[in-house]
Image 1 (cartoon, one colour):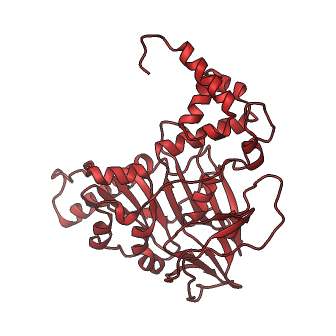
Image 2 (cartoon, rainbow, N blue to C red):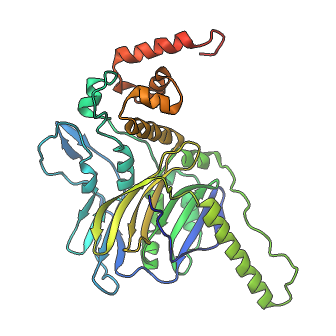
Image 3 (cartoon, rainbow, N blue to C red):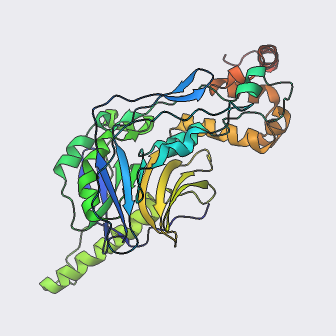
Length: 390
């Protein structure tokens, strides 16, 4: 994946409240020809019908509408709120492909596009290899071959449930020119949010408490883990006037921004990950990105609107939990080796029984034939040393 460019965004001094650290992102000039809007409706979420009596339902508290024009700033426009629209009837395919994804971003007029924040990203993760095995190896069940990885279900926590986040968003000031924010809980990067215009950010700033956050971030908030001390004193040496003080403060801000961008936020975009365009908006492109699911590191999913040069006008991200990373990693490894257990196990340096039990622990045991899974369990018990714990 070509790394996205955050050109035009500067890191401002962070603000800290308990475990929550908010790092403002400031633009000197807004991104022209693109605006974001929001409006909330009171109607309940509806189900998206995907055929065969199956319904897909999700709840997002709000929707974003991107408006654009040919030249100059986009005129203000009404927003379309949270709702999942019925899909048109289509013939059922032989296997379940990833069909609803494009429907999450829909044209809402000649110059506006409605999409549900973070839904593109989460749907992209849930649909990872949703079709299941393409070749009917003998280990896989008929259900796996016929219907793929279903049901798809992941848990997320509302921002209101992340302790300290609501207070931090209410108390902290919004900087002049602020077009985005990076949210940290106990110095773990939880979410990135970028808008094209400072007025858009001011209007959408409260929506962060209605966004989705992962299990790790929720638990860090519950535990009240403290954020680290990353500030450095100015020092008295060489400061003899107000001009010297201003210069020293400017140096410290520049050092903080460089440290933050390289160390704290350096893993937001994964160069080995993937991104897929969803819609085009007259020179802008709405895309979702997935990481490489490398174990032992941060993995973020998200969505962006980029201009023709790849610069980010809009960004929203979601940090995967360790369990989600493991599941994504297993699926990518299986797909890379044609869904053959023997080849995947060899690539991972383990035997087939260990891989089968790993799939079961990750929630994918139902994809294997019951007799095959029972066989691998028996092999694992037989090979386990007698004095080893169960």
